[in-house]
Amino acid sequence: MKIAILSPVYPYRGGIAQFSAMLYTQLQKEGHEVKAFNFSRLYPDFLFPGKTQYVEEGDRAIKVDSVRSLDSINPISYCKTVKEIKTFAPDVLIISYWMSFFVPGYAHIANRMKKHCKVITLIHNAIPHEPRFFDKPMAKLLFKQSHGFIVMSDTVKNDLESLCNSAKYIQNPHPLYNHFGKKQDKEKAHQSLALDPCKKTLLFFGLIRDYKGLDLLIEAMSKLDESYQLLIAGECYGNYDKYQILIEASPACKRIYSYNRYIADNEIPVFFSAADALILPYRSATQSGVVSIAYHYNLPMLSTPVGDFQHSIADPGTGIVVPEISSQAIAQGIKDLLSPEKLLIIADNIEKEKAVLSWESLTKKLLHFINTDL
Image 1 (cartoon, rainbow, N blue to C red):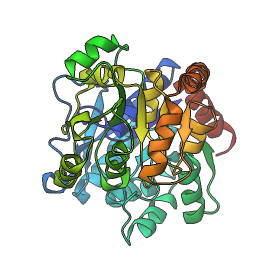
Image 2: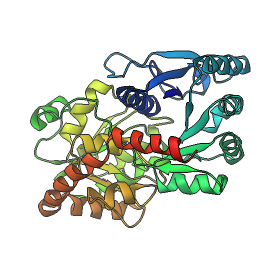
Image 3: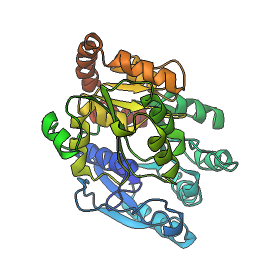
Image 4: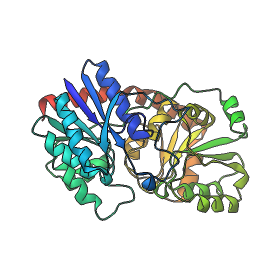
């Protein structure tokens, strides 16, 4: 089968690019002819809140060959991309969607291609975590051009059904990100990060945005005794000052270690190897790529009751979902999570769940969907 993937991939960094590269690689392994159609410009610089959009030294990016034709803000490139995809003549076009900013280009391409091949939209987020008034109508515009969809959580499934009630879709959990390297010696990881080796280490990892609830976790630290320390690792999209003020005002300030910067791929094993648990104090969520990394490193997890965490953490017994979004619930949940008896059960459950979260499982379901339902 000839499969086109329209998505950011190398040299762009981030979870969407990683996901698409791993899907590309798996489909190739299974004998399909796959071609990636990439962005020549993803975000205009003035709209991008981080340091850089591109892979840097130290990133273990999968170097996918791609046609870099789509400029997100140049309509001429939309036509150029259609021409490039038509030249490849795919049986299926998979479009990675997560943000309404890209709908003008995506919808134009999908509309022009839907008579020539099956168009499947892979939805990471149907509605953004920080929504704006135009997000729903823009998403509807793209979804009308699609023959089918891939979703990875109940939250996204429900959003899709509310926007397109006749949608055909498959649902599959987010597969593992397993390309960051092996787990390291915990003592050496502690030394590398200047952590206290005698304390239980809680990890907050990834882009820092308001909806991820870092403030709640900082507050929760004041409710935990001296045996706990918090490791914050990630680049802040916005102003970090408000978090720094909370840290400095906290009675636990000396037990909070902050690495407010982009964490390169080659550093990820250090942070996850140093941790005893991954904490996800989110105010809203769909699915999380960070959960996939935690599984790879056999790390127990705690989350708030939002998004797909009930299915990805609580149901398989690989962590705890606390009953409410509050610092008190998070603090109590952390105490329960790190009890020796609980950790033994979780360790066994993580190994079982890792066998389920394979890329082979996703592609098998996808190919059946293409061949039988569309």
